[in-house]
Length: 480
Image (cartoon, rainbow, N blue to C red):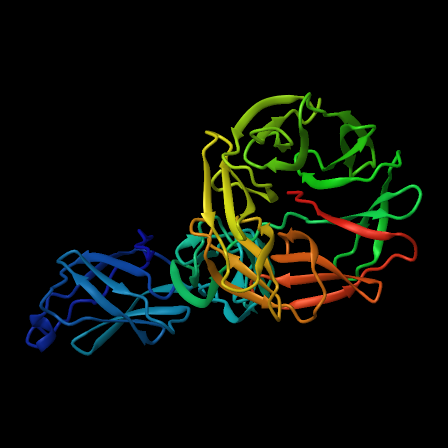
């Protein structure tokens, strides 16, 4: 904002009176100067010269050390002038009718130099990222404002050659502006990317065929064993693996002397816990974690009774909590997933060689059967992504495929990838940190970790074969 200063007296008198009353100047009302509003100013400032006998019909020329300013207002008692660009410290002169008189002196303060922008460290970012604006003439003592499409960021550091700023909440794709000395300048453009939640997914496997069997962590990029999480403290075979991200525990089960046990392995400390979870009738199969509450709910498919059921199980005690629903047909259910968008368990069954997508709402028990049968091949191994997209392994065709399925119609949406080998895939999990399906296959007695990126369709085979035993049942953590 330009300033109008009130000033000290610099000059008492502008022009003396002429003794020649017949000269042209005698016809003028010669201004008498009382005050000048400032002794210091910068280019663009308005100064006020106060006095008497100013005439708005006359032409006055004001110069600042020889550089002419702009007269902006004249009344009988003052004249206002704008300090011009290029003005330097020195005399202020007033000219009227070719007569020039020094009316004062002024010191011209140099304006802070505006930064020169050379580049910005990135053209895309997510909220919370720190970006660097590189250039010259930054001053750590000055105030700068950076906005991302109109939303002001937080400046975290200023040096003479750079400025760092944090992308604010609410920032959207658009222009980056720098405001300095009340002047805003567009210095670049940026794309604000959607935040992809990295759940810190870790891959575990059940290592069987050795004594004791183990839960191990696997490097997703190399297929190599990272560490042993726990030695299994019994000789029974484990199955139905899921991950409880609320407690960082792998949950599975085993049967010993016809009694079913809920078995938990904490992946942080390796602690294992066996809890009897045996119904009086039927048996519990296919644990399902419901990620819609805190803590997570545990559900199970209760089979070998009529009708079969979906039931809720207490995660701590292994005891029955409540019936969710009775299954309204006699077909065996498999490939259980949980859709947190709809609070629904999704699985499938086959009836008269037709595959059905089967949904159970865990809030109201409502069940829905939707035919989901390809014209060729068959759907196996349903896989739910972290953002609740449903994928399936389509086998019985050449090549086999990973496809996306519409949860509401059961229809194929698109082919994600053609499988680039003839081996059967199994043990499907979803890696939310990379948007990849992870499974495995065996070729010539060698186990391979197989990854399919659901965004690009890229497939990757990585040998993952222990020197002893075998890897089964991949388990993916979801640690936020």
